[in-house]
Length: 234
Image 1 (tube, helix red, strand yellow):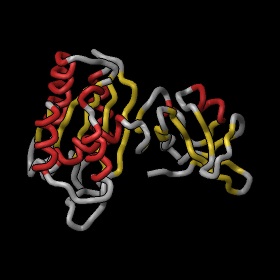
Image 2 (cartoon, rainbow, N blue to C red):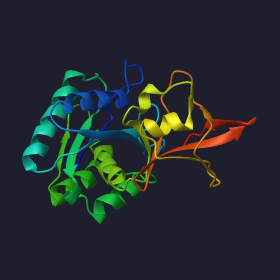
Image 3 (cartoon, one colour):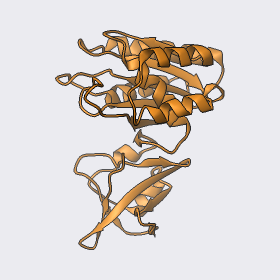
Image 4 (cartoon, one colour):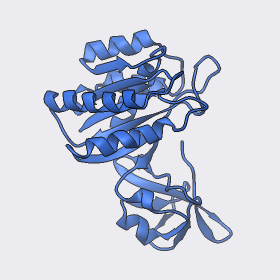
């Protein structure tokens, strides 16, 4: 697997967020390589950290390997990002393969969820691990979150899916069986109850917020008034 992570690509008044741009990159990449999915990862929210609305990054999971593929994927992502650059944003781009993601990078990703990190730490880590990392405008602070997303996505136990299979086609109300047929592996509550049948109420006009949990695609739900209602995580 090769991971493409982007961060700080949007502005408060801009027409789109980082998640939408990540899906656009995935739509470009899929012409050359299979895309497993796109995930969103929540980072630390703190008054001393500049961010737009939520301080989250996005990662495209690409089923490919090798230096040639990484070079090509980096180039494709950079082209899409520069073609949709928003004045006032501070985008960063990082690309790495599975064998480049070490314990140090996973720890860095975890730190990015609870403490303030710096560009210097991000760039030093990228240099030591030979990871492709680049700032694409503004202050280039997006390199901090771009590196963090690599470690968080690799662990397959953080954040939620922005795109996977045909999950985005499900809106409003659907059955548990529909979820299983469109890429969800498990539907359960946070107190451990699992469901193989039933109807789930999703957000109006919004895709289900499924989560990667140890490699499974999970939709957490809660019971309200006898109904199963999508539950939000991270």
